[in-house]
Image 1 (cartoon, rainbow, N blue to C red):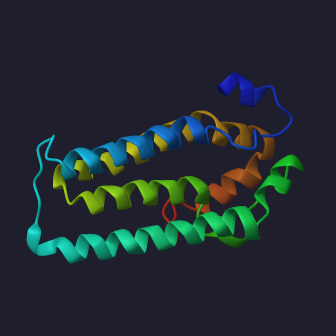
Image 2: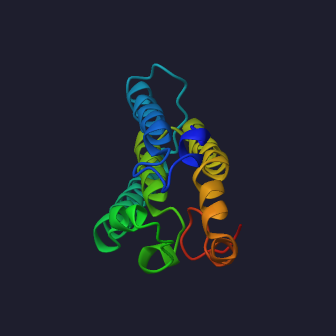
Length: 166
């Protein structure tokens, strides 16, 4: 997959997303279903039911905002085709708003399951996404945009809005 990105003039429009997001959503949905039917060990905090649901709703709404802002408002497809480094709009809040949105959707599914054991999954998803993006899309962006991309990384987090990291 890395060679595919390396040999192109611009990033693929879908990047590594389908390879990462589809399994992430599948595993989250599977965890929800298996928890619902008690086919896997389930540990719930019944007294926190509404907190889990409220947090899931917030994550879904924020994920929808991030996705719409990244796709519709920033017109990311056009900018990828024109080899533009996008650092404004929602991309000023988070470097990968599309992946962040899907990570939030997956986490919301897990919260809806109410299964505390499954809360390890978002951490695994975050680590897998971070590693895959660092080895593919971010490597390509660093090679293509150099110091501009490095500076952007220093002021904008990969997935969590409003927080700086590299």
